[in-house]
Image 1 (cartoon, helix red, strand yellow):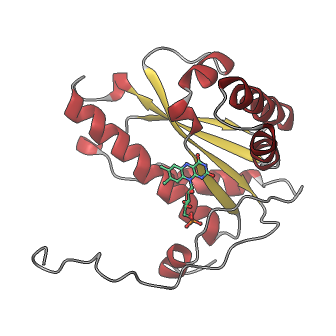
Image 2 (cartoon, helix red, strand yellow; image 1 turned 30 degrees about the vertical axis):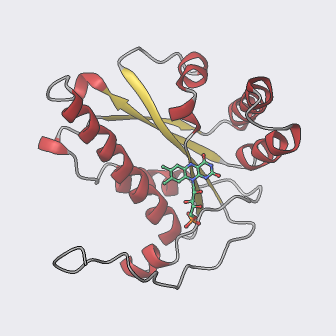
Image 3 (tube, protein in one colour; image 1 turned 60 degrees about the vertical axis):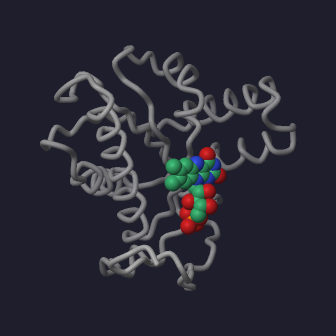
Length: 190
Ligand SMILES: Cc1cc2nc3c(=O)[nH]c(=O)nc-3n(C[C@H](O)[C@H](O)[C@H](O)COP(=O)(O)O)c2cc1C
């Protein structure tokens, strides 16, 4: 297993997966990393859908492809590429913000809940990389919650935030090595 910083530095979005299944113990290790994320008042305002059945992954990928084309947001070629990426995943994790688990139902608490789900997502990406798996964060559950709510029969107090594709890497981009100038502001803006 990689050390902590190497796992962070070498993480990239993986968009090509092999047919090799992901071991249950690896999914468990990744989900342990997921729920180790911080949250306000330690409220842990999350639930997860863990999709391991290939038929269901295929159904989700083809539904999204159809919806992309129908909505006019993507041409057939782009929708087909999206289908290829999603259907090649061996496991799909869907992060859900559970409004009932927030300390209060107000805007600030909700934003902090969403931030907590983002921390969870990054833990998942890093954990997957550390154990040699590929992962890829996609925003479609946020853009089209209707599709996910219908397919997985979600209650109205649960809001899908992201989905993360998991699998063994068929190929991977190189780690990013360049530090961009001008984004670190020590002690003051200028
Ligand atoms: C909030 C969020 C939403 C994202 N949504 C998508 C997405 O819908 N489709 C996609 O291909 N990649 C998505 N990505 C992945 C980014 O495109 C990717 O992280 C970025 O290009 C940097 O590449 P890297 O992850 O390899 O460093 C998303 C990433 C984040 C953090």
